Image (tube, rainbow, N blue to C red):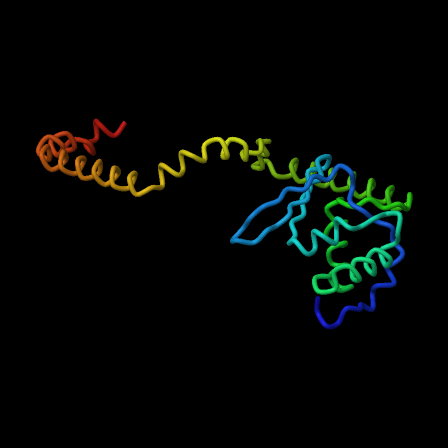
Length: 196
């Protein structure tokens, strides 16, 4: 947490009662020896990635309390890793733009629904306007990659490297021994009758 924990814009969000949507799935990921958490909203296919400290704060959000109460409670529990008010506002803006938050206020829910409809309409117009755009739905390859993990250990081993070098050397040897036949086969390759 930085030295300046307060924000002049805190009054705009402090009374909001927010929490994660029930439909949000969380995936733990490792990237460059750092733990990241990916929030996935399954209904509108939106994502948000954050580090562990912000993840803990987001998970602690409870719509039964307002944001100010949530933040003060979190800061009392974890003073050394708590986000400051500007960081909280930034996290909320990013999560709200990806439709990952539940607002207890009914008007906010209607606003989010309208925003989602506008976003879908905008995406549809972009697809129609861009005739070269092809979106093919694919599946999550994690299960397949986990199942074939043992192959990668074999393929990227010293044994495989030595075997690959031996095969390359044998191929080079075969080319050297049969270089006359190879050059005879390629002589008429660029002739006009062969171009078609």
